[in-house]
Length: 113
Length: 113
Image (cartoon, rainbow over all chains, first blue to last red; front, side, top):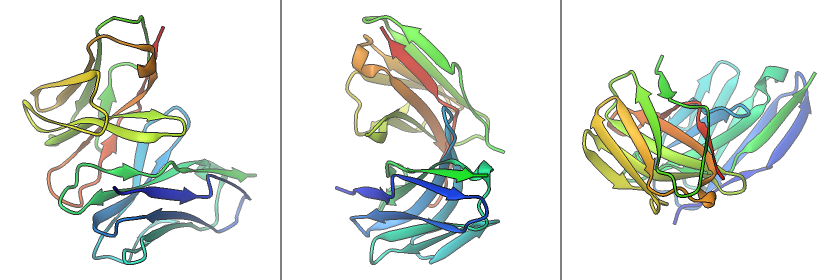
């Protein structure tokens, strides 16, 4: 059974710092990995999707990498801002299906002005 | 932009009531999903639908049913609400095919008294 772990559970940084969020998964047979952002009391916003054949994806100040063989992904946020404060979740889709995403429990990021 | 709309942000119901949660998407997506999100447990898939009138059980379908009579609308039904169904419910949709991101609504926070 696929398990997804995100460490740390919470992270607090000063504004302007570059930071890395970690995601690990136990079964490397995945089709893709997605990173989401969730603001308090809201739904999830898709940030980046990395296909299993890709090593990384970039969107603005965000860069996500994937090392499928070692079961790891990182989300790099450059020049963090208070507006980046949110919970970040990663999710993997198993080989053979795009439907049954398995989510990590998230990292709560606080960026202090 | 994809718009996934959940009919209620907050809902309070009583034990034993039949509860309907509604979700509508405006992007002609084939797939729709219902999740619940609980502290410490993360997001768990209840049901998903890959076409009109088609459905598959997720990880925790007990106590729930779903209905998809039209492509844009996916309903989650709590047949006889119980207090352990108090939770945040999230609806999502996606196109068919691998490597298609899921798009989420803002969620319904349901309290069963």
